[in-house]
Image (cartoon, rainbow, N blue to C red; front, top):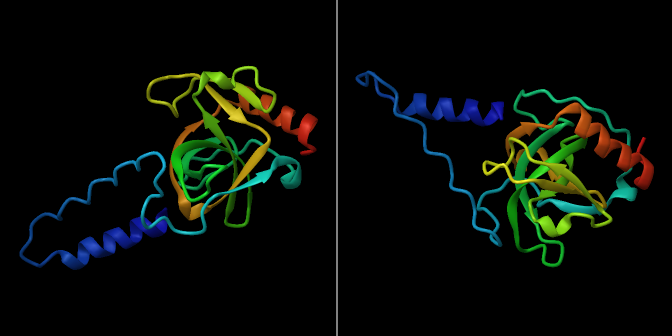
Amino acid sequence: MAKILKTLLRRIAERMSPRQAAPTPPPAPAPRPRAGTRPPGRPGAPARHVPTHERGRHIEYAPNLDGDADPGEIVWTWVPFEDDPAQGKDRPVLVVGRSGRTVLGLMLSSKDRRDGEHNWFALGAGGWDHDSRPSWIRLDRVLEVHQDAVRREGAVLDRARFDEVAARLRQEYGWR
């Protein structure tokens, strides 16, 4: 994120002539991609689904709103559909770990049909959804996302709910 801001500021400075009194405004944020389409120019490899038990690791709560995706934060990224990885949609993801430049996350869904399904955890509503809809987290598939593919931080999940998710990952999927 810092690298992007630095590049943007350098480009703005290069465009300013000595006669200009004020800098030109930064470009408007890119529109959200339509469901089913991959946003252009997304850096890094696309997100990859991995069975949770294969990615079992130590989990700890460590949110830090510093522009990087940290465990306990809900971030937005493009997530491929499991049945057709060439398509997908922008969605919120709970960060549960990192491995170098790879963010490990669990995708969220606001589809109420997930309620009571075995591999889904009822999370409730939060600041990641502008309509305050309840959300569910898919526990059985970890997303591996390159850190540069994370679009933005959406919210920090409170410690109590994060601990409930962590407990399920430990009990059912071998995480520590």
